[in-house]
Image (tube, rainbow, N blue to C red; front, side, top):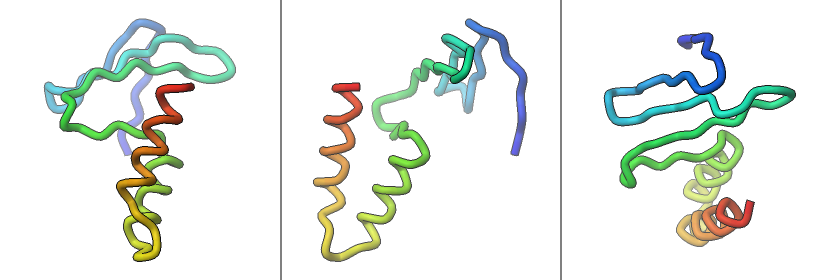
Length: 75
């Protein structure tokens, strides 16, 4: 794992296509992420739910993704 130190408004560029900007720091950190629309960007716990749904034949993974996307928009 690479660990970098950044201050507010500083960025990290990944593969020349993804930019992560530190927007706000405090008790939590707020990140701004710019990435191509073909790159899925999810919080770790959301990503895990999607993986769990994909491995469970009784669950429609695309339905989980839709619910996650709707929840993200409302947040």
